[in-house]
Length: 284
Ligand SMILES: Nc1nc2c(c(=O)[nH]1)N[C@@H](CN(C=O)c1ccc(C(=O)N[C@@H](CCC(=O)O)C(=O)O)cc1)CN2
Ligand SMILES: [Mg+2]
Image (cartoon, rainbow, N blue to C red; front, side):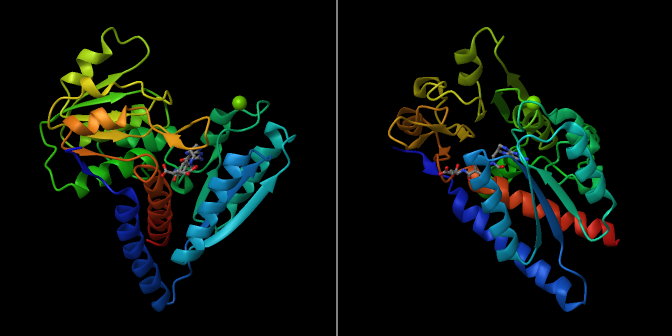
């Protein structure tokens, strides 16, 4: 392997130390701790783990965690009433509804109900629109985390050819907007892209977020490229792998993220960063 690893755990830890210091400094000025409400609906095992991790990270950093657990069988009206209550609660700075939701619930309606200035996931159309206008406010956590990982390499991204593989609302599309904002010439590929191999081969920065193990072949990677793998796929033996064929890609790339330990730890860290930002702008 010739590529250098981008250590998401280490970058996340460095950012968290900075957040912890800023939160402690606020407390020393008599300001209340930022507060994050995490709404979990039902018992999905993976969601339970992610939400527990978010709540624990809040406690570590000095953010007040407001845990809300709703029954799997609730209807839209009940979930919207919970959002309305949290929207109106002045002691709550950030609101997060863990996805995916049970089938009977409509995630779009729920996300649009969250007050944009409390939408610490950055999923509300207002926050996405601000990002599209180069006026980012609360930025979607995973793409924002990828930008921080790219920054951590010390390489400039101005004018670079960036290719995003995957066009989801949560990762691929906002990732394209983030890379555009960072000065990259940006292409977003999706299921109708005619020649994915050719698009990837042109890229100096490749971000892959599809959820198909090994979709991006190592031989497609341009020598010297930076490869960010957002994919997280569970193998039959319980281990995790990304969307990129890691070993052959690492032979060609200059920088690459591992899975796990690459993008994953950044998502929760940027959520904490958004929560502090939401608290700061509410106080302003
Ligand atoms: N409301 C939201 N729902 C969901 C989001 C989100 O950002 N907001 N993202 C995902 C799940 N997710 C956080 O919620 C998340 C997934 C994975 C990780 C992570 O740290 N992964 C580790 C590996 C973990 C493991 O071993 O299983 C890694 O990649 O290193 C963090 C957050 C969907 N829902
Ligand atoms: Mg649904």
